[in-house]
Image (cartoon, rainbow, N blue to C red; front, side, top):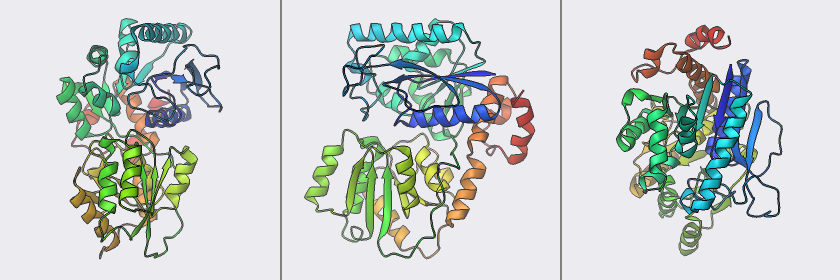
Length: 412
């Protein structure tokens, strides 16, 4: 079986890139052939799947050869590009669309793909429809934020979703938002959670009972990620001396965060900027807790990665977090509430009943959210197997028995 993933942005430094890379590797483990088309500045590492890059001009290294003489556009500002889609001129957009269309035609001309999955839908989904190709769309959140702001590419997004065979998202909560925002048929949308790579994230050493806990935040420094809510909660007198904090990520609120730290003399919080995945894994393994204060989420992947590292999570009741942290596996709080997050942080430091051990957290997340599970469900969805199981929100995620029974079918 030949599989094609397409992304508007680079695989480097993006959640969608992490998702595609991990899922592509999982498909290959099942014996399938995978190609990935994405926007890139360069490709520096070998991958087990075929790369089909469209090269854009790096804003730092402007003299470098590129297929297009400008940087690629992202949904939100990113360390690798300052361009967003609505900053594309008419001329740039015409070149952008023509190049992507040409590249897709080239790729599909020499390979018959049995599954085509485009991240975010958006312009590439519209092009796939224009070319008469069947495709799935996976929505991850940023595209909906931009759509709701009134992007000039709303029509392309609508065409992408209307003509997609199925729309994949990570949680039932986000499925509800998709149906509400885009007015699509609920039966067209499948809530299919992502996975986590057990080899990329290892369990931490036994936690020492230090009075000051190491807290980690990983995400864009933007309003939807709740970073200012977190900083305000950490500035409370009863909390500010209980944590040493590492903030990984960049974004439009970077200067606002720096000003808040300075104004409130929060010397125990370090803004580390964007970090490579191996460094995130190291920081994760050294942390006592990950905080996800998001106002909206589709997953998030980072919570799965923390639990795979044996690190407990404090998170808001959005996306997959209520399910992940249920039954005492973590601490939940209300979104966009400094008071609720402050209480959750105090709850974590003063718990009478301990949270599950790092080993228990890792065993849970790897049994329920392995990439193997996600791959099998995508394969069975594409081939029309077990559709009622996939559609029903009442059923639990696939058990080992279900995975084992589907494996021989999905590798054929």
